[in-house]
Length: 69
Image (cartoon, rainbow, N blue to C red; front, side, top):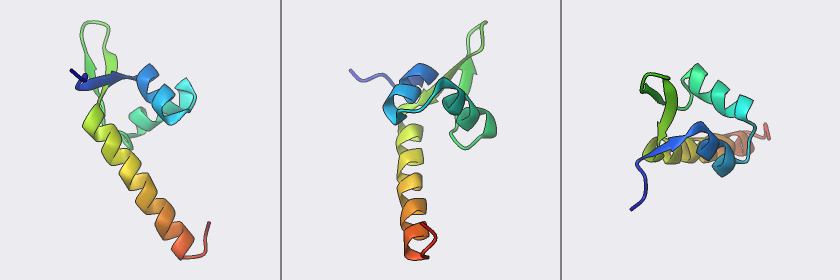
């Protein structure tokens, strides 16, 4: 069974970005996430990460089409 939620470390690994970048995406709201438990750890729903990735592909295509790549 695939886990519904990912840790920021999982997001970091999947996107090949730094922990600071992953945290920034979540804190800015660009990548929706929730805080759970008494320690308020961040969790990203796997489907939200996939939506974020698809959105980034669309933005990249738009930039390329506009000649701003």
